[in-house]
Amino acid sequence: MKNHGFGQAAVISYEEYIKIRKQYTNCKHKLIFDVGWYTGERWGCILQLRLDDVFDKGNVKEFITFRARTRKASPQGIKVTRQLPISKSLKEILSAYQPQETSEWLFPSSNLSNHISLRTCDYFLRSAVNKAHLTHRGISTHSTRRSFVTHLANKGTDIKTGATHYRSSRR
Image (cartoon, rainbow, N blue to C red; front, side, top):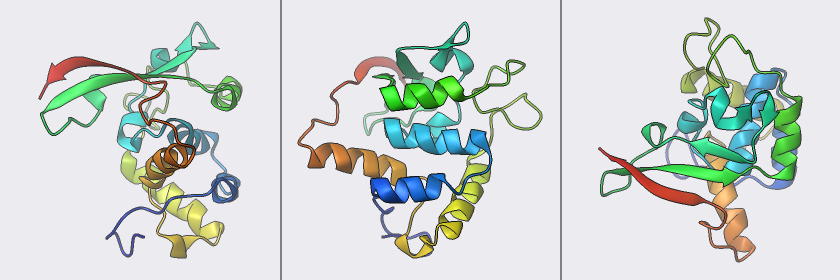
């Protein structure tokens, strides 16, 4: 468990996910949390999603694309694009979201020329966790990733199931 930024991020139960989610008042921040929960991707990569990585002519695509240039490199220095099928639950959430068509970003900053920052998202997550009375749990932006992988492993699922990987670029 994280203690003052040290240690591993907490694994969140579904009940805790719902409890935290209810505390978000901004639909953009809530959707970032949801995408993390349903994809297991790092928030830094999620924030760099472009509209066309998720939507096609206003409709939610079947797959969400996390571009290689936005993802962390492997120990060998290789970055890969990751495509995941969009679950039914996430598709419903995305369908209800009204993206700002004036920006290329799914999660634009207030000036629309760039994406929202990780620092801003961290602040709003910490606020939601505090309001949910779960501060003691050590929940961080990495918790959705750890939770995703842990829940898959607990079900006996290979963590690469459903993901398409291909080499894109070297660091």
